[in-house]
Length: 168
Ligand SMILES: [Fe+2]
Image 1 (cartoon, helix red, strand yellow):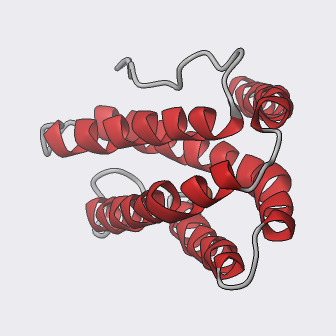
Image 2 (cartoon, helix red, strand yellow):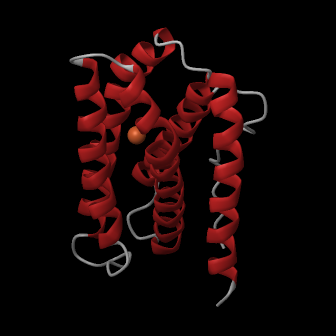
């Protein structure tokens, strides 16, 4: 069994955006590890894709449930467009993640799908960190309180995934 080291930093006491940025770094490490993986190491690729999909799914759910609705309310005018775009970008990412329910490592399209997924996510992360997050830092949201809520929600979602994964 291949081990994958990349995982988000412990999230206690972090503000919400720092926590999401730590997720971004962890996801980028997985993208890098996939690029470095030997082309024929299907087991490692499977593990990396699985972990990427888990992290991205939890991350996107937490953002959509806890960050974006509040962000839309706190931001003004054109800044709200950033949030609307983020929802659409998440939709694309989720569509690509869904493809991995059928695609197996070694299948035609497996590597290509992961590549396009990583490119989409990198673009999304860039937008969030360059524009949306700085705007939110100025918007007067209680990011520490939001961080606590997010950490709790992430734990519930991670446990649920672990339960499903160990149930069969
Ligand atoms: Fe996001």
